[in-house]
Image (cartoon, rainbow, N blue to C red):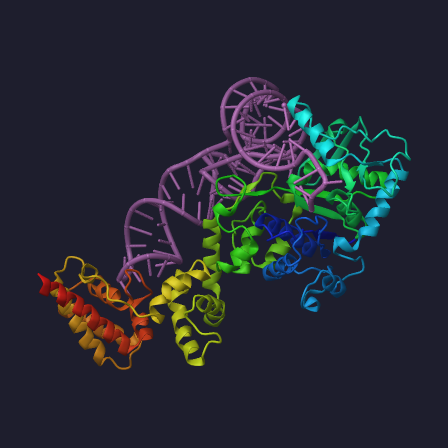
Length: 505
RNA sequence: GCCCCCAUCGUCUAGUCUGGUCUAGGACACGGGCCUUUCAAGCCCGCGACAAGGGUUCGAAUCCCUUUGGGGGCACCA
C-alpha cells in the first residue's frame, strides 16, 4: 500500500508558519516513503472565504519546495476565479480537490448517516442554541448541544425545510484514538457533542468534509497539529458508522512563539510570505522547520539539505512536546545558507531586495550588475537575511552627507591630526592606479606607518568620511566600488567639516 | 467549568521505548579570548538543564504515582 498524505489549508488568509511546519512533515513523510503528497483546499467556511488566498498558499508551498502530486486542476481553479489557472493546475484521479466542488458527496454521506441511525436532523435556531449555552455557562455545566432534536420522530423535520444534520454520538462507552505520536488517547463518549455535520447552507462542516475526503482520496496517514486531537473521536465515529477504514493518526506538536505563547504577529513573521519578504532562503527555512519538533537520532549535524532530510526523516521520532520558534536560530541558519551561495547566486537573490528598496533599476543595467557583483563578496559573511543588504550597501547608491566632526576624529587623536590624516589619504588615493582594492591597500598601510597611527585609527576616519557610517564592509574593496571620484569628493567634504570646526573655535 | 496533550540548559534538541557506558552530548543565544581596518565570519574557552515530591530497583533523566507548571480543545470556524 502506498502512503498518501495531504495538506488541507483553508483559503481564509495567509498560511501560518505552524501549519507550514506540519506541511513540511507531511511532505517529508511522503517523499521518504515514496508516497503521494496531496493538496486539498478546504473552502467550506463561506463567511471567511477569500478566494485570492488560494494563489498565495500555492505560491508559498512552491517557494518552500513543497510540490504536490495531486491537487486542484485547471477547471476547478478557474471555477473559483483564479487567473493563470493552468500554471497552478495539477489535478489527479480523486478530484475535485476543492471542497466546494464536492458538496453532493457530503450531502449523500450525511443522508446515509441518518439512514444508518448515526445522525439526525436539527432545526434549532441559533438563538435557542445560544440560550442553551448561556444557561449551561451560568450553571457551570458542560457546554454542549442539549440534544433537543435528537429524539424527535424521524419525519418531524422535513428534508425541505432549513435544518442541519448532527452526529448522533453514543451516550455511553469510550472511543480510543490510536495515535502514532501520542499513543492511545481515550475519550468518554458522554463528553462528546452532537457535532453539526451539514450546515443549513448545504455546506459540510470540517468534521464531515475531512472524513469524506480523506476516505475517497485514500489518505493513509493524517498528519496534523495536535490541537485537533479533541475532535478526532467524532471523526472516528463517522468512519465506523460508514464502515470505512480509519487512517493512521499522527498528531504533531504545535509551534509557539519564543515566549512559549501562541506564535503571533507581535513575535515577528508568522506567515510564509513574511519570511520570504524578509529575506530568508527557502532552503534555510525548510531546514529549520524540519528540525522544529523533530531531530534525527544520534549525530550532531544541524545543517541538512533536502535530500538528507528526506533520507533521515522518521515520523515516529517526532516529539510530543510543543516547540518555541527561535528567530535567532533561524537567522543563524539563514546566514549559513547565504554564505554557501556562489557570488552569482547570491547576487540574483539580492537583486530584488535592492530593487524593492529603490536602489537599483528594474531591470538591472549590465554595468550596474558588474559593479554589484563585486559588492557581493564584501557582504556575504555579514548577512543573516537578504533584506539586510540595504543597510550594508545603501551608501553606495545615495549621496553621503559628511558626518559630524566628532566622528571624523580618530581614537586618541586630535582634530588637527585627523584633518592632516584625511588630507594625506586623499593625496595618496588620488595617485593610486588602478583604483582597486589590491592597489589601494599598500599605500594606505604605508600611510599608517608614515603618520605613526594604528591601522584602525586611519581606516576608521576614512570609513566614516566615505560611507557616513561607523560600520561598513571591508574598506579597500568598498572604496574601489565607490570609485575614485566619489571617494575623493567625500574625503574633501569631510575635511571641510573639520576645517569649519577648527575655524569656529 | 469540563475534556485532552505535554514537561532535559534561556531556546531547539540527543539520551527515555531496550534502567548502569550520563560527573547528561550538540546547536542557537549569552559572557570572555584569539584573529582583525569597523562589523561580521572563523577558532578557543566559559555559563547553563533532567519541574517538585514520593515510590520500584543494587542502581532512574530513563519505569509507576501524586503535585506543580505550560499548551490545546469545548461554534451551522478550520
